[in-house]
Length: 414
Image (cartoon, rainbow, N blue to C red):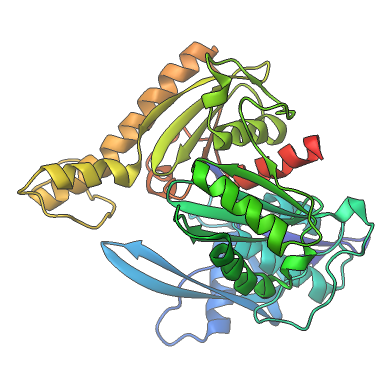
């Protein structure tokens, strides 16, 4: 949904939730008998309070999700719409707020990479010039156009790689603009050739090739894979400088202070998360990373990473229970209808979700007291969504916090 200002500038409407803060594009589910276009117009009217006309079809995104214990496949169709009337104050209760953004601000505010791609396509369709260089996107492998002219340091193509215990997250930046993100399986015995082959397949879907990459910023909680990705950089990224690796005990500038007993043992992902929290949000801050483990990082008002609290991850904890309790059958995660379970399965659902919510709220409350209160609570990580809707202690959800922190780390040390 867009409108033109008197100056001719285009603005787009985003829907948002305030706690945790998330911005998204309006969308919804068809009613039987509706066409896709009728659904789009109805859902936009309900969620934003605005009427519109469809200008053209923009894109579609596809993904899998789990609900009520079953795995579902979803396709979302996006249309470019021009506002014809209405008032954002009349939006329904599904979202907390509806606001108008410039296209540049919308690209920075959106929480999900696929929707960033959609807004970039809208920018191109509207003929709006990018603020700091446009994204290059595509659904199929395109004919190659150089992404960055040689020598244009302001638009350096950076590959940010975060190697976790379960997933490898990769993101490509052009300057400050995030172009694409991917998630791969972590496998300590996988070779540089194999990871290069995977990236070589994925890059063309974002209008890229490996030779575009000019710099690499790397964090890894799996020591064996540091050498693997350094080897990948040297052999498959001919135009890139050597990989810049985040280390707690290194000589690189971190942008924060490590006020812990042994800085060398601080996880590199913890460092870049704290850096991103300090630069992109406010201090003091508590960063919760929901992954294989759930970590709570405490950063004080002076930008010192004081330490952390470490708990088993959302699924890791239940895996241990299922392995040790012979009579408990493994279940699929789903939202419980009530805290009091009336059978073993619903009791497990309740303990799994609400028990973890209690853990999060309890640790956050204690950290807030030790930090003096008022800390910005930021959630990230692949499993954060299982907790977000059940608590109000999380202020910001940024699923790309670590990738953004890697870019900031590279900028400080290039």
